[in-house]
Length: 378
Image 1: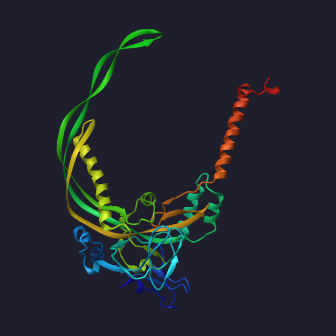
Image 2: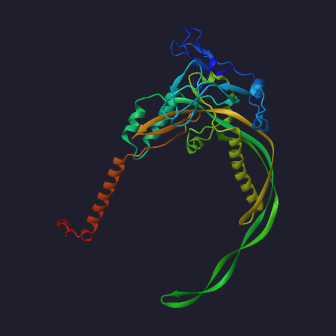
Image 3: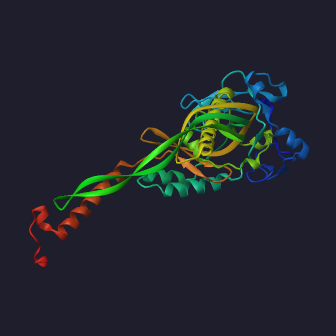
């Protein structure tokens, strides 16, 4: 079903329902009616969370049931690919608060296999954000005022890829082992030369080669380009054990971003991360005190992937004409953000520090400042 056909009408009053974070139900803010989201049967759930074949995905050879037509709009400011459901034709970008209008037509995307539903309510996320902002030194006072005014945060499902692979790697390198030599040196002590002995560390190098193997499971790659990679990475860890089969009812009342990082680019980044881990495995296998790795040749097999959605609460704050973003992990409450700096607070702190240093020097040694000693110090 195309996403523009999704509706979540209340059975009692016809108003639109929204997903209740931390629960498995839809609620109506108009009349208070509650509708349960049907639970997936264990067998159906296992099928829905099944990994997809990476080679087929890269060849664009997935079945029609694994693809979906989506309506997206591109934010002109930050480039976010915001998916729009229902009859909505205009909205506000949840990443930078820029007004956006729906693009025409649809795009063919890989359908999400699973998602982690929101566990934190908007109020709980805002409380975590306010507490985090309160810990920021030299932040503008208007920042906390903005947060405490209670402007609603945006709940967004952000796209991620997960990658699995079995690897077997052949390597060649060298193992370095320390040994020590004693040498005689001349040193000057109290104006006289003395002969002393000292230990000097040397390294013997031996050729090394071998194999290491490692299986990777759910290497997580953010598929959004609208969020700074640092912020997205530092929202970890995610409990992917809470993944549930994709069900559009979990999106009721929330926004979702379409992936902007292609499957191929995501796989390249995942392989880079896996390769870093493999090189560390190689170093441990070589052993010794130091290692030189000359080559690593990796065979990749059983490569699979998933497209998943993870919940993030977002707020955008503008200060001196620049937009700053704050993110709250909708599962754990971890907070990350781009912080503004108050020039006035920094200037005041510098002046205060200078006054304190001046005062300390004056009280301990007034003559150092070419000032007369106070009578009470004489």
